[in-house]
Length: 155
Image (cartoon, rainbow, N blue to C red):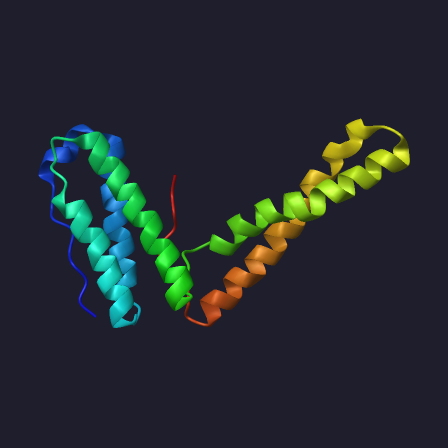
């Protein structure tokens, strides 16, 4: 597995947001190198990195968009092909699913039983708690199976 390296960009120091995104992508690539991935997956990741390397430093908006797009594409590819996920991936995913799948129906039930649909909001924290519980359990399974990257996605 040979991944293309990100070209160092000392000229991006003017934009803190661009700098953080670039460092986060470097961190992701470092975490990927600690896992054994298939050659075709490595080739696809290298294509994404090559696209980022091709963008000039002078166009900072385009570079920032390209970095974020590459990071998202790499994470989706790793999840789909290699079943490797970043830290807290399932917790974040299931928190949202818990709100919509469990929280809203519970809130509707409370609202209908009390005759006040303003009680709808009571179910959301319950759904969040259920979602975080399920997601944390899945994250622990991924960690024990060695399918978790030493990388956390930051906004």
